[in-house]
Image 1 (cartoon, rainbow, N blue to C red):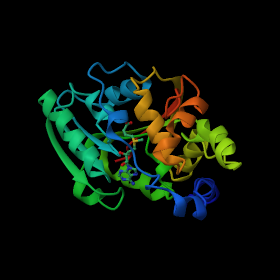
Image 2: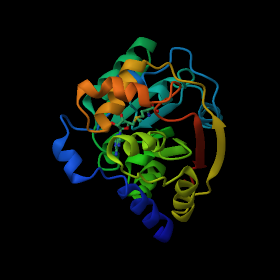
Image 3: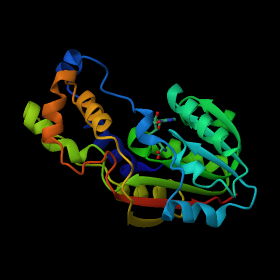
Image 4: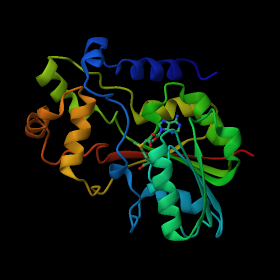
Length: 259
Ligand SMILES: C[S@@+](CC[C@H](N)C(=O)[O-])C[C@H]1O[C@@H](n2cnc3c(N)ncnc32)[C@H](O)[C@@H]1O
């Protein structure tokens, strides 16, 4: 249905597969996200993603946050949102989302599972968010169609302009002599969404710096690089001082429900 762009999206994501021999030698799984890097901000910034969500969100409206992590996207909409639903494939993220919602005194529900497989259990919401999750999704069109089916008003996607691991490509070269890919991009994501039939709007912007814990970030990158814990000083030295996972150049994509 969404043809060439969707196929390119998938192929470019697949090029990020970590070589088998490195995976086999890895001291722990290189995949997964530590919750501390994705906690909801107590004072959410006024970002284009937040603004475009608020435009569509009625007072007392509902938000569904797909790939919610600790709920940074949804919690930035409380208020005016009166209820939030978080979907995530990682149990520790679901717990963090629930805790963030409870701390704000907002009605909440959590769904552990992978989107779009759990979409029917999620129900519908006024605004549906998918922030910093699309680069985990090889089959982007079905993922987006399920987001669209779940919203009564608008879907808001936030993502880095380029794949979030691109800024670590020099480290792969330094540690393994391995060239890493550069695609896909937010621009290609917009092409896939347009080909899927949505009228997609796009805004590129510079995200404020996240509060980051350097030691946690170094550990995260070290793990992704399939290296042992004792390599952390070398990773720290190789990683730019201002490195942030998910660079600050981001794009917000949004479309309105045709329903
Ligand atoms: C980089 S984090 C972003 C979290 C949050 N949206 C934010 O912007 O801070 C991506 C999250 O998406 C989750 N995730 C990845 N693929 C998913 C899928 N297909 N369905 C549900 N959750 C997914 C991961 O477990 C992780 O918590």
